[in-house]
Length: 225
Image (cartoon, rainbow, N blue to C red):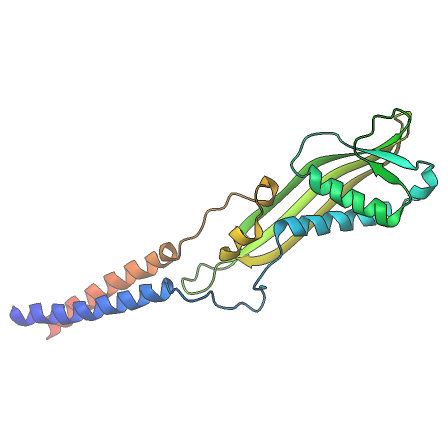
C-alpha cells in the first residue's frame, strides 16, 4: 500500500510540473510571435475608411466633368446625422480642392447656390476568427471594413444633376491583440462587438484529456508493478 502511495506521489508531482510548464507556455508574458503575413502595426480602421472612401470618390467623380456644370459654388449638406459625416466631408473637401474649381461651402444660406448632398447609408467593421484554435499559435482575426455612401449634386432649382452610390470593402488579417490598437475613440463605426478568445479556454480540452489519460496510465502502471 505504501509503495502505491509513493508511486502516485512521485508521478503526481511529475504530472503537476508538466501541467505548470504547459500553462506557463500558454500564458507566456513574452511578445506575440511574429507572423510574416501580418504587419506588426496594422493600419487604423479610421485611416482605412478614409483611404477607401477617397478612392471610391475619385473613381466616381473623375468620370464626371464637374467643371462643366457651371456651378462655382456648392453647399455641402448631409441628409442625415451620422458620426461618419465628418469623415465624408473631409474627403469631399480634399477632392474638390485638388481636382476641381468648385468651392464647397459648409454654412451658406444662399438660395441660388447648388448643393452637394451625401447620406451615409452604412459603414462598419467586422471581426472573425480566421485560424484553427491551436493553443500555441497567435489568434488571427479577419478584419472586414465596408461602407455605402449616397452622393448627389443638385442645381439651384434642386434638380438632381448627378447621383452616385459610393461603395467600398477591404479585408485583411490582424492579431487579436491588435483590435484595441486599430479602433478609434470615440467613433463607434470604427469598432465592433467581439468576443475575446481566452488562450486557456482553447487549451482546456487538451488539458482535460491529458489529465484523464495520465491518471488512467498511472493506475494501470501501478497495478502492473
